[in-house]
Amino acid sequence: MFTGFMVNTWIVASIVALIAGVVGSFVVMRGTAFAAHAIPQGAFAGAALAGLIGVDTILGLGVFSVIAALGIGWLGRRGRHDVAVALSLVVLLALGSLFLSWNTDYEPEIFSLLFGEVLGISSDQVAPTVVLAVVTIALMVVLFRPLLFSSVLPEVAEATGLSTRAMDLIFLIVLALATSMTLPVVGALLIFSLMIGPPAAARSVTANPMTALGISVVLSLVTVWVSIALAYQWNLPVGFFVGTISALWYAVGRAWLAWTRRRRRVAGDDVAEVTVQAAPLGRCRR
Amino acid sequence: MTAVWDAIFQAGFFSSDEVQVALVVGGVVAVVSGVVGVFAVLRGQSFAGHALADVGSTGGSGAFLVGAPPMWGFLVFSVAGAALMELIGIQRARGRDLATGIVLGGALGLSALFLYEDTTVHNTTGATMTVLFGSIFAISSSLTPWVVALSAISTAGVIVCYRPLLLASVHPDLAAAAGVPVRQIGAVFLGSLSVAVALSSITIGSILSTALLIGPAATAVRLARRPGLAMLWSALIAVVSVWLGVLLAYDSYTWPPKHQAWPASFFVVAVVFLFYLGADAGVSLRARLRRPAAGQVAGDGPAPAGVSG
Image 1 (cartoon, one colour):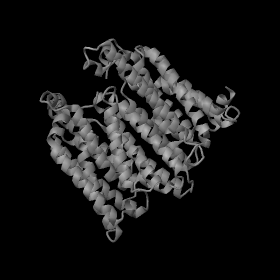
Image 2: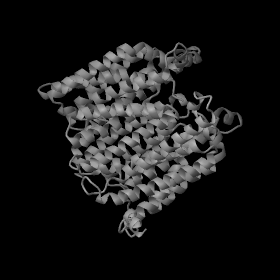
Image 3: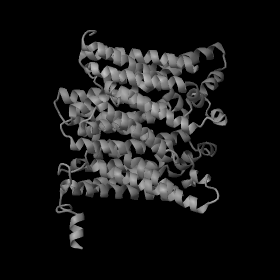
Image 4: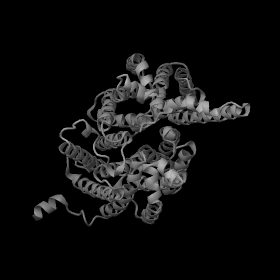
């Protein structure tokens, strides 16, 4: 399990988990889960096109995930955000189905692109992943404070001249970068699970954004490691484990929340205080 | 004239059984999606609408696996998914995004397992494609009673609750003050939505399900000021999109690059999207012409159907 080609898998998967944990925290904070689902699925069309014209899959994924991000930003400039995401998603998926219909001998690749192929990561996949990861992390470090500010206190951020709209677009592009990197590993559909479950669970445990970020990274690393081990052991798709374990974390987080609340109530603490403290973190868009 | 007619409706279009079923079933599904979709858009539940289609597909692939009728898989998973979202807390704007995401994420994990088993153990190649992309030309006529029943259930839910649902969607606080059971109404709508989505994803696939639920409704909400009118517009746009898409897909048999049909879903989505872009451009142009001095304000556009984002 820890030899030969599996070494690449462990390295790449750990990087993926790290990125998903960090970027996912902001996805949950900013309430952009739909975009986090749509961008990878839309990028899938890029992979189909890349397969059709014979270029590197990563290139197709990168270009199309950025197109998806820009499309969401452009359609969302007036009108509803969730509608903009839905429209971008279906347009890209329709393109994807068109490209696939032109390229019929593609089914196994489709499956692994959708659900991940952790067990077959070659050594030439490691370098691009590391490069993209470094770029994404660098962007996150630079954007960290303004992103956090505009996620937690959007009105105040706007008042100090930080455009929420611009931050939205920038964040979507970061999401697109993270997508094109993580997609070949955990698959278009399961990056989403990894970006939502652990951060959502972390948020149930603590109201402090930094602590939540840390917990989220740890949980997502554990998720990926356990998933790979189990997938390797039982020869099942890694996406299954990533999806269910991620959802499980959330259930655990909720149970924890319910339990601590009850304890506080018994102790006579003011429950309202806890809820108010956690409120700004869960801003939902419109 | 006849030559133009023949070029548009190529030989056999009206006599083909597949085309007839696609036109009829696709039309019915389009009407239901269009009507239910207006509320999905007004309530900001596009994500839930899309997620339920994917959750339904998970059920479909599970049914494939155990040899049950796929219809039941789609329906049970979609309705159960909606119930789970409601349970986690879709009614609060703050938790909606997350509740939907968690349910979707978990379902996608199951999907990975089911489809993997379908393709490897049962060796049903094409299961992935069928379940994920669907085909409007592969609707089996045994589905017809289901289509009728589910359409009726879904539209009935929306029509029976029309007035309180409208108030609860547009002004939740006002509705609560007026004694409307906002949460129960929301749950009824989510039920209707899940049935409508199950219906559309089993018949025309999950891509078209989302496209027909959101696209025409979002177009109509921009165009029409009254919600009732928006529902009418939405249903009309959805039906026209499906029929045009089917026609184009039929014609595309002779098109490059492979001289085999392009997917109908591509055409339907393209038409839906063009409608949206057209309406969007038209509405903002009108707003700009009306208020030439206040160019900035035009960016927000008028608030159609009495609601803004």
